[in-house]
Amino acid sequence: MGLTKEDLKAISDLIDVKFDAHGKRFDAIDKRFDAIDEKFDNIDKKFDEIDKKFDAVDKRFDDIDEKFDEIDKKFDAVDKRFDDIDEKFDEIDKKFDAVDKRFDDIDEKFDEIDKKFDVVDKRFDDIDIRLNEHEKRFDKLESRFDEHEKEIDNKLNDFRTEFKEMLVENNILIAEHVQRLVLESEERLSKEISDINRATAQNSLDIAILKQKIS
Image (cartoon, rainbow, N blue to C red):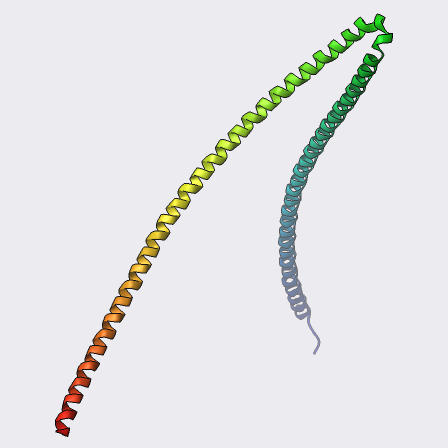
């Protein structure tokens, strides 16, 4: 018996229904993958935010490194100035040596004495200025030493006070311990004496009974 048109139509409709059901399932799967992709996108955004924060941290560290570089340059400049000062002092020493040499030749150069003395006076004025500056610096140093000495004295006084308090507390603890030991010793000695007295009384009683038995 062959299939009728109605049978073929029913079979076709059934197949279409199944394909539609499968299509809906595939659509549902696609939606789930879309949701997963969205979650991954959100995670990527969070990672991007974290990367930006780390970039900001790196930038702050770079700024700190730049500041340290500036500080190093300033210290280099300070060292250079100290080197320049040392060179100037070397020059001054050489000039003083020249002055001494000129004084040795003073008898032969009377005509240049006034000019040389003017130069020497100028140099001594410069030295006085430097010495005055040094005295001021020494005064500052002495003031700082006085401040530190006061601070040390205050700390020593605090330490002495704490030490005395510790000694008082320790003495109290020692006295309590000694008192407890003495009390324990007295109790132990009293017990031993009581035991001896009982033993002595018992021995006397035993001797008296023995004497009665012998007599």
